[in-house]
Image (cartoon, rainbow, N blue to C red; front, side):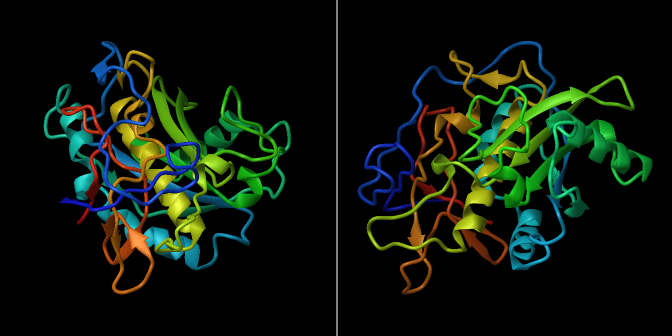
Length: 293
């Protein structure tokens, strides 16, 4: 984990859509530091299963390959050091394991009967029947084909940030498992919404396609929140913001790939991405760092 010399903002953060300039380590969403709410379960060593959920047309390409090659390196990346520090306040030797991604082909159009919770129940029921997961210790993250994440026919229950025209970035929640007496943490990752798609005014370029960087940033955002607040009652600030919300929109430090104008702030295996910064509860700031294997 190295200090970077530049920073990038996205969305409505200071500097407009994007701003490259002198580093400034502070949380975009200010508030109290994170504290344990006092009743939520923190999992010690959960497994995380990425599910490429689609119609069979989009995920059969290089995009899924880039992400899948990077996923195994997440748990050992320095980005999660602050997450582990929080988890270790409640458990011992916190960590997580990335499972091999799977493909799940759903209907091309999600109708009113196939809403958010129904989709999750469908997938985890199938996985449980196939004995392919340890259900009580696995977090499910569904990465949606853009046809779902940007269309109004995907019904998201009680998601304030969802816009039927813009789509959504991502969210996590939990539901009562259909095959046991426990709550099942899950997340959806999409690509819709202006606040999760970044562009640059200064001629800089993303290390991957805009899609890959968007998905990876949202994916990591949801993982860190699932680890520290998997079923509610976990680590939040005085306004209910989770660890991923504290630095949302702030990309922290970056470096260039070779002599190109392509910039990155995290390396996962041999893949480079630009993602949001990691909140540091010890300093209540969003450090200007580059996260390495």
